[in-house]
Length: 75
Image (cartoon, rainbow, N blue to C red; front, side):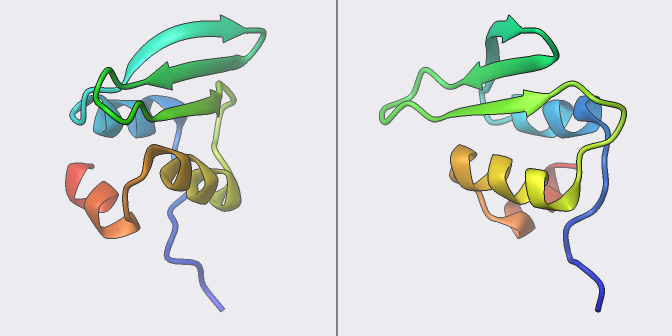
């Protein structure tokens, strides 16, 4: 039972999502907030840990409004 979601570092995820216009707007402790300036505004929080768990990546992509396939194409 393997997950389709890869285990990545925050920087790998952010490099891909920055291509969609996400920019850092705030940080509190180890959690950074990113959002777009498109309408509707899309926002996600990413923990700046050494690795992002698969479930957390799924949540980030859900919040960002992009599919796993779309995301994998951006990597």
